[in-house]
Length: 159
Image (cartoon, rainbow, N blue to C red):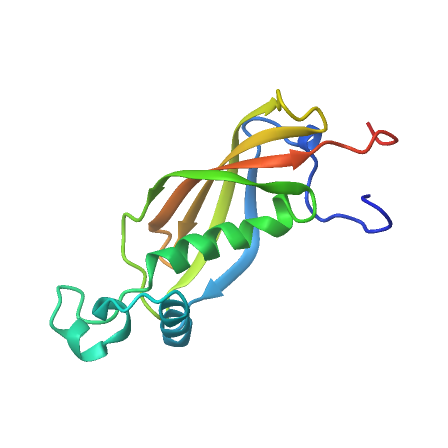
């Protein structure tokens, strides 16, 4: 516990390399998600916000904004992994979107611990490298990334 709050996430020492999390949360993405996210982030790409234009593309309809898909994928993972126990993200690497995501798709996410190491500059922290993967309702891979997270270590009384 940090202070008097119980943390849902795991501390650095509680992660094991190779550990896999199959996250329970599933999310059906909507046209409203896409429109709001695209406009809030000032992304005017017609492929996301113009249904008439999107009809003329190979997809025939608007694509979900890939930054939204990335954020949703990582967000779904937080409750089981880093909620309240992370100091912050250090970076996202190898971000991939092998298949398009459309409004009406239902995404589910898995996370795997690829590496972990103690922080050389911050003795109260460790670094965990996660691989996050998102799949649609047909179990097709639609997104993946590697995320480096700077994690709190177990409080001294729990170590």
